[in-house]
Length: 45
Image 1 (cartoon, rainbow, N blue to C red):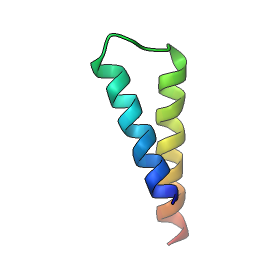
Image 2: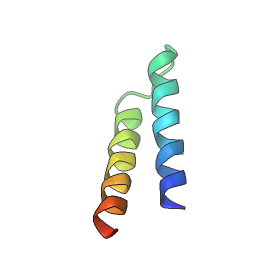
Image 3: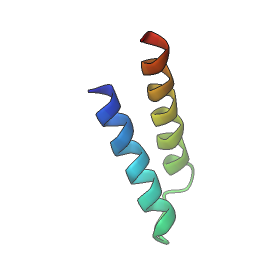
């Protein structure tokens, strides 16, 4: 479940980068959260 949420956050971040519509720092916060979730998943394994 955590991996799915992380993937969704990364996709939303990429869509924010590709389109000219960005919410400023919020998009980058989503990316950081997604990376942290992925790292926690690998550490727990």
